[in-house]
Image (cartoon, rainbow, N blue to C red):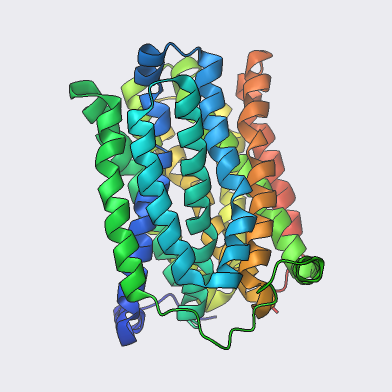
Length: 406
């Protein structure tokens, strides 16, 4: 069995990531994802300020978050189609530019209707970034795609840790609108950087969707109908359902059932994402070295164990340990998406990945609704073992996967 990378191996990987100007591509994509994901996760802590100013009910506030993620899910397939037609660079630049403009719209929204419209446009705009970042990294790093995608995902987790805290502090001492307005220029900076760093689309592109037609769509669906693609999509759908259900209610559960102070619960929530900064690159590197299946089996098995144990663990120390172990779930997505990109035909890579992401993000977004319904029914403690059972289904699917994408 191969050993884990030594210091020399790590140095070789880092040099490979930076070689031939590719380091700039990774830097600007990771930075763009830092803001794209981090700003989306800033909405929940700002809801009290938004509700107070615009007079929104709790239901309306929850619907705002649902609208944001639904728009993000629905934008995945169009983002992949646009990538196959106009190239990665153009899609990423458009995404960051649209995100900047819509953030200014959110900052200036004076009614609930305009806030919803701008928020959904922001979600759709960031969705274009979501698909193209995987394909451009997979094409740029043929032998290091797992670790490159893992580093980018880790940057997103860093955004989850930093930006919500910054947004809450700005809202406390200034106004919630200021934070969104301040984020907009960063998106413009990354739009320029991505245009400069990523080569334009080759003239001899072999994309199957250069024109939108029934035949093009038939080619996309034929590409995603491959068994490894469908099985891996099932794996990530179940894990996304688990992730959404867990992250949506973990702080509330810690306060209501474990008796922690809200600030302490928020700290554990931040710890969960902070550890993802380390876990996701390691998962990507492990996938490159050992194959996707053993890494996925290890990460998902840890998820089943921790979520199933949560109702039976009390005390701050044990909960810190359990939170740390539960962050293993964050290693699944970079490995799964790298596998999907490799398993899809080259000519429908972006469209196929976008379609699969639309499916699993849309279906996975039902996780919080179901967890909330279980909690309202008086069974909050059993919501997390339920998520563990869902993750166990993903283990069964993983067992039927080839270790590496065919």
